[in-house]
Image (cartoon, rainbow, N blue to C red; front, top):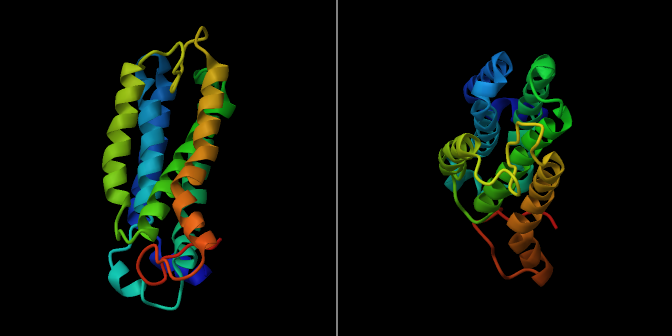
Length: 211
């Protein structure tokens, strides 16, 4: 598994993504009152890079091989997800004295973004889509940046709160729901198909996820 993970990990993309996250967070720490939308953009980059790490260009071939999809998925994220999250946490810790004092929430945002990206792309791969990560990233990154910039209704929908008067507790609940609900909702069809038993294929050969 370790050798497979090292071989299939998209190292250039991961290095660029980790660098982008670190730079965005550093810019936020430089002057958060002005640069705060970049914090949401960094969360979007986390999700996008995580999703793209699961793309499999040769899916038509490897989906027919003995190694099941769940095994190959674990291999693809074995280095990507921990690496991205470590960079995210370290970048936040480095600027924690120059951003609002809610480090736990900011770490949770990154974890929830990764959870959402994994859930959606794994479900799409199980449905037979070879490269679901790129379209997800193309959607997630600009949407996260737009929400962070526009900050619609921060009183009851505080996705990326910044000011002390905003509802930080509500934001924690919101991101916890995303982190927990994303895999349940996205992977529910696969689990239901497994419960129904064999004879009802969900995707290409080898695409079923473990129950």
